[in-house]
Image (cartoon, rainbow, N blue to C red; front, top):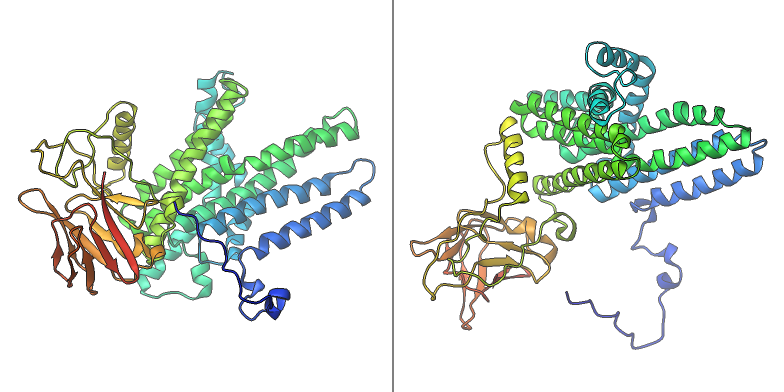
Length: 483
């Protein structure tokens, strides 16, 4: 990666007024900055903590701990919200949290009773072994709590279905309640999970720990020591479980015929992750918790990054390739195969995981893939290009080419300056050579390794593709390289 140059040196020492007084600049607006809310929240929390500390007497630290826990949950949610790029206002996620609190107050005991009476969810009577506790925690806390936290998702799906049937775009209020896709569903779930953490921690676990202390000071210290990890655990705990459920609920917006299967899959997966965490100390107090946290983190961030990519594709927004798109692997020198042939399948653990994923896909009705599965190499003579070709804008982000695969240049390379509407289709000739057909409305320019140049009109094809060839789309230079 080439580092950007340092700022250019000015010819004079004169400074502009806005450089010296940034607040007076007409080119910035701090009220529109997405970083403003975390800054204000952090500053206000510090003031509140200092004020509470100086006024607290006899170790009555309940208010202090409540402020600290609320800050941890809010700042965690804000980090997810800001990184997601969601267009909804952050305040639109207050209602999923409020609905969770209401359910905890009025209907949770019903969920609790059903899962422990009619399902094997009684954790108290279960044997103190990992397998028994895992089953009990999946059917007990797992199913009941994850169903409760998904209340906003069910409401959002109903509102989205109503808007779709009525053919209306909706107003500000209905769009706040409507579930708009996987990233919106994950944020709804995270908001509900954050509210659940606060209620469970501040009204149950911490008070019980404080009361069990040998003295008021010891109880307060123990309560604070429990509060911090319980709240910080949100990203691999309650917020993650309900966010994973939200991902599958968000998929149901665009796949309504698979709604029931997607909701069942999301609910089951969230309950399994939840049950594993609760039972993991019976494996090992430290390594069991670590394994559960790692597994939940992998599942959560896989869903989160995929949700971001789906949202960018849906809206035609620039894709942040450094954080949400996989890089094309570098393949070592091997057998010569036609350009565009994917690397050979490797088997082993990856094959087993792929088989499990395929079984899950079939269970929810997956009939297509967004990526081309690898196939066996086809050996040919020494005159064909080695291995295959990749396309990209520099060395940071590259994509393998395969026949029959569409390319949305506007989405993949918007950061490089590709205008909207640029798309193509990779095609293969009888001899295995690849070409790209221009399926968009704009004309491309092309330069070849031998120095010749030309244009590619709409519906025309450029080929055969060669390493070193360059396509000019708008102001962007897209090059082809062998791998």
